[in-house]
Image (cartoon, rainbow, N blue to C red):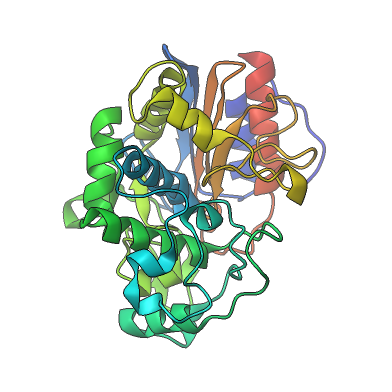
Length: 349
C-alpha cells in the first residue's frame, strides 16, 4: 500500500475504505474507565446503508477467546481441568489419535491438529463433519509446535459443551455476556437483527453475499454455534468486553484475576510463537497489534477483519471491526491497517 501519514485512527480507517479494503469499519480504544476514541464509518455493504454503532459484525475467530473464557470459567468450577482429555469428555473420539489431547493442547494450538482444513467441501452435514474431524489425522505429536487450528477449537467447543451439559450459546451468555454486560453479542442472529448485520463475502459455495450468517463455512455446516467462529457483536459490546478484561486484571468480573493471569500467560515461548490459552501474544515482529504495545498484550484477530487486544501495562483496550472479506476474501491491506491502527492509537491517545 502507498506510503501515507495519518493524524488519527479515523483518518487511517477512512483511507482504508477509500482503497476498498472494507466497506465498513468500527473502532473503540479506551481504558477501564471508558472510551478515548471510537466511531464508525462506511456502509454495511458496498452501496448499502450507513453503518451504525448498533450494527453486528461477524467476529470470526475472535469467537475463540470468548469460548476460552467459558472454558476457564468451567476450570474454576471444577467441570474441566487443563489436563482433561478429549476421550474423557467425547466418547466418540476414543480410540482415535485425538483421544489423549488435552484442553491445554487445544487452547494453545499445540495439539498437532492441522489448521484451515475445508471439511465442508467433502462433509456437508453436521454428522459427516464430526466424522471427518474424528478421522482427520494429526500432523505432528502434541506439544511439538504451534499450528493455528480452527479444527482444534471446534473440538474444544464440543468438550466445553459436554463438560457443562449446555450449548456454547447458553454458556457464552451465562459466563461472558451476562457478567460483562454485552447486550447484542450472539450466535446466529435472528430475522429481527438481520437488517443490522454487516455483509461479508460473496460466497461461491452459497451463491450469495453472506449477511447475518457466519462467514466460516465449517461453522455453517455445524450449525453456526462453534468453538472457532460464529459470534456476532457490535463495537459497543466489544468495547465493554475490553474494559471488562482490564478491570478483571485486578478484581473478579468474568474470572478470578489469578485465572485470567494464568489464561493470558505466554506458554509457548520455546515454540517461536507467542500463545496463551486461546489468546494471541505479541511476537517479536509482525504482530497485528503493531509495534508500540507492551509485551504483556493479549488479544485475537478474526478472518473477517476484526480484532480485540488488551494491553495491561498501558491500561488500554483496542477494538477494530471491519468486513475486509466483502465482497471477496482476496482483498489486501488489512494487515497494514491493523498494525497502523494500534500504533496510531498508542501514540495519539
